[in-house]
Length: 423
Ligand SMILES: [Zn+2]
Image 1 (cartoon, rainbow, N blue to C red):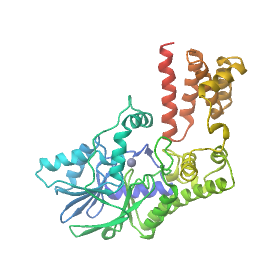
Image 2 (image 1 turned 120 degrees about the horizontal axis):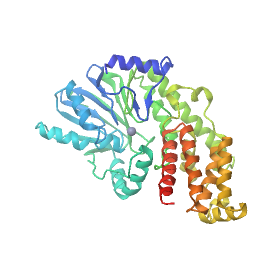
Image 3 (image 1 turned 60 degrees about the horizontal axis):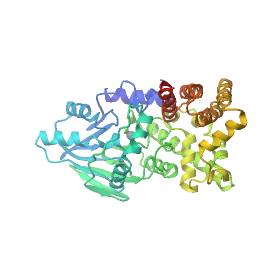
Image 4 (image 1 turned 30 degrees about the vertical axis):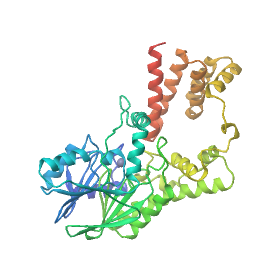
């Protein structure tokens, strides 16, 4: 895509003149190397590769996923033949770092010097943790990204140069101020590039509600995230280069998305803390905290990937630990024991299933899910219970806004459908 066209379309998305079209973490019609400023290119992929031309070679922000890196490399080569000098990992998520092997292979094939990888000092710990939790991450990944089976990479190229709070790289006459921010991860880097008045934001802006809540992942940091967005805005950048979706151009446009995203996170943080400090239980908190409507209505804050309710849970977890304030949940009975007792009281698992179906028809899918789940636990061999459970979660995945929630409900429905084949 032409860089100028990309920036113009972004502006229309922000003002609402044109419907914002992100599909998961991609924008529609993604592809090609978009020259968004003199010597700066953004290649949309999973994740994006952002490239700066310097006198010593190319500086990259992120190297994309191992599946998308080969294509990103050919896009890069339509723009420049220079060797890649340095690649900064904006954070250690696999869609941002596992393309490194492909970039290394390309450098070796061209007879270039090895690429220097740079990132925050917590990235090596993340890669080590990925080895420890390879199986668990495979399951998460399967549910989140609708894969046919669990899959998670096990090979990572560790950064050669790490830093703690901030560092400045001067490469071929261009300065890159790298700043650490806890936000989506504990190892995030954003960069200020004064020569271009540009910021590389990694996943701190993704064209939809910040991914600060992801139900299946380790702690995320809503407040620190907001602080980093305000720090970025204070630089008065004219170009915002994200790791997903198109670039944003123009000082006012960039400031608007940064500051409104910060305000949204701050609002959830403030509301959640106020309730925690008043002694509320987690369940009350998640049913009470709401994003102010004027922010919820912004096209680039839609809960289409992650959602505010999940962010509230992460704020709770950060400050409050895992205890939710309900004493019955402190040392709970086995889920199956509770389900069997409830089924016995009701008159059988089928009665619970029928109730789940009726409640779902009335439209309360949250409540229906509890009964469907209990029905199956009370009688795991009942085809009827599995049919209802599959139907409830199928209905739910169709109405939920976030990719995260839809993925989990979809996978629950599939589990019951697979079980039904044996019944
Ligand atoms: Zn990402």
